[in-house]
Length: 596
Image (cartoon, rainbow, N blue to C red):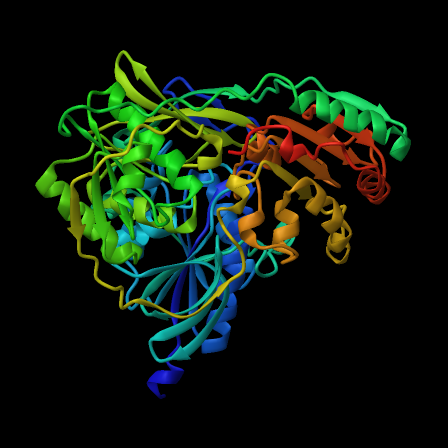
């Protein structure tokens, strides 16, 4: 057998989760209690199983499914075997109950080390009960392997290489991945692996490992992140519903004008002004695009936290303008010579050894930010609070508290230890009012290239920052066919609007992934958001919580979005758009307020 034809040894990491709309509570030890809830295989793990089985069959390889959880979690392993996996490992120990992402990654990495000659580890992009997107990069860091994801396609191209198309926020990239490697699979990039319970094997080849068998794993009690509380989601909007079709357009426009012409939006918080040299603990902000609106919000948030703890703000970025970053709150700039996540995380780790550990590290919620901060957190043994929609300081005891969706509730979480790490939906943050700019100290941080993941071609498809700059955004859901988007062009031009979408739309490729709003997409804060043909799932609405005015147009009077908007119109979207375009406004929406 030639090396090219060598069968690949593949492990696929899967997770058992409660149904997506469930509402977990906290147990007596402050852990999310899911014991009373039904369970199923995480939806994104199903895609990982599909890709693992496809790759194994194409190479005559072998798939081992791996999960961590209570005894009942063996069910997802039985289903994975029914879907084509060859055998399975079940990591199960009462001391692991309530483990956070880092402790979970350590336990799974320890289990993977028991497998010989492993070529590929495949994970889902995220999990429906936590949306961390950090497990893959953390496992890759612990195993000292390259990581690529989220992948849309996966093909073997050589004895030790795979070719993949990556789904990134600003477009798509083709990469060559050197094996062994860890890979995460994009949402809806392939059919979901499913098998009915009646065909699950009765005697499946499952090996159970506890902590005694995994000396490198740690107990859940050592988890650096901790859930403080959960609470139901609420809305502060008071919907006005118009039920009369396109005949109500004049009234709709009057209401929009009234909302937008009301009291002006409050200016963002001023960036704390510094009159002395940087001192105190550092708050590190890491960004790949330092001139973007996202970076402006991120650096301002870091400066706010630094001022609260008597510290200073450090910004790590490639191609940075120190004067601009100073205006948004930076006190020191780490100028990066490269941006490959794996060597960058190593370089930042070395920087902390010389400069001292930062009090906190902040990043955005792009795939790049998530990988860099997940790898850095693993190196530092720090708690990672991921995909937060809000962040605050609690004074007694001093702690950083983040808020994020968890199923159908909001969870407040904190990180313990010397370093706290958080990825944020930057569109959920206020844009700070700039302080007078000045020169800053700049330190160059040399970043090597990652030989394990080589980009061969990029396909930029969008201006990633456009949505966060936009004052008016029109969102389209599954109720608006992709071939009808051109019917929105005239209205978009009149209103100076950008186009956004729900996950179902971007999953089908109708719009770029960077246009997706919600828990697994982006958060924005336009003055006006118009939702067309959108049912109004909680996932999507998280992305527009900070919009000043939300207008919903849907033909279904029972659509959930009508409970979470400011103005609703029960009408066919086509009729409404045509009427809005024909009627026009004396002053377009984007002229009713000052630009951002």
